Image (cartoon, rainbow, N blue to C red; front, side, top):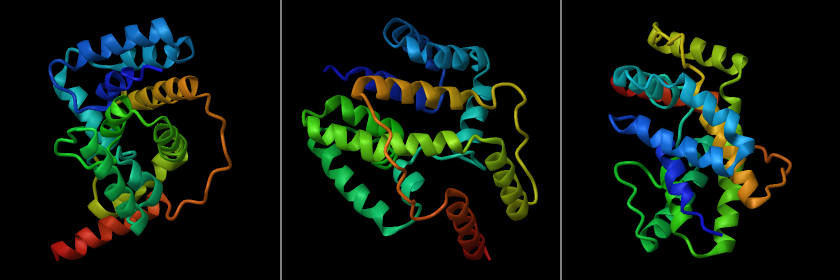
Length: 222
């Protein structure tokens, strides 16, 4: 199976720049033509994308994945928090990135776009399937769940507790990246005939891990 389209899908989760809307359009065309089950999700993403306003695109990305974020694109953190298992995962992934000559740029080896590009470069089918089933599928499911209203409310309360303020949530497009994650999930499931397994108990809840991280950050500052 040709998996080069995962390099294309990786662009969906890159920090927006002036060329981002065109790359998104290319992804939309690809999905519309090849993955009808994901068509509605990618079309929703495009509808919500403020393609003529770079500042707003950046704001939506940051609010989703960076500052006071809904979730993170670092798969190891999503699954394990700061547990030692993430360190083991990063060590193994760094080896695979190096052997595949996959440049991770300024991000870590478990960053979602880096993993998607790695998949497109690997020849070891067994390793690819293992990454899909053990890392990407459960992590994406968890990331999608972080957009649930109750989770969003708890995160906002957490950020308000620590920072005494909240970044204003854009009224339009706030759930834009939820649609992107759903589209990616459907592409993966179609390609690899994924069968859901019982969810393994995660080492630490994302909100718990986030709370601990902020507490440590505040202690360092003081």
